[in-house]
Image (tube, rainbow, N blue to C red; front, side, top):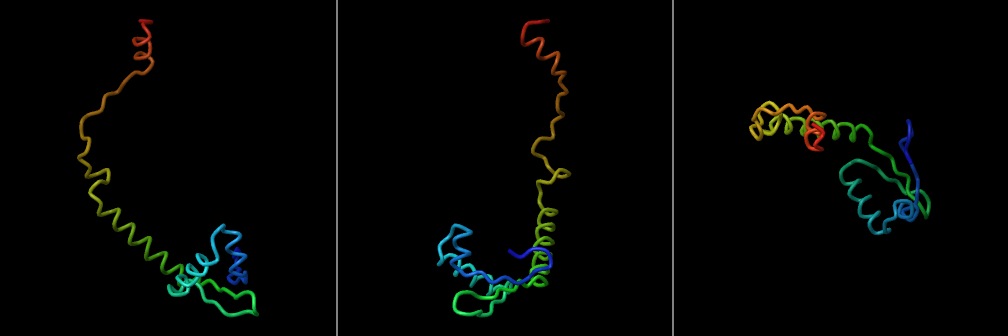
Length: 107
């Protein structure tokens, strides 16, 4: 619902639940988690819906931290291509056309 430069929306929890095919309880629980983590801020807007504001700056900082963490873990992994010892045998180079002819008895 937030696209472009738009960072506020005001759907009801029921509307979110219908669009996401989830229960109202699930939506409420997840909105609470998002608020606790500082990803959204909410303000009451009448009796039906709240005004939700996305914390883009916090989201961007958390996303960058997560990406940097993942990159460092990937770099430390012992299974990357340079240090892998899983299959260090020299691979055969097949001529698949020749192999096909032999298998079909054409040669």
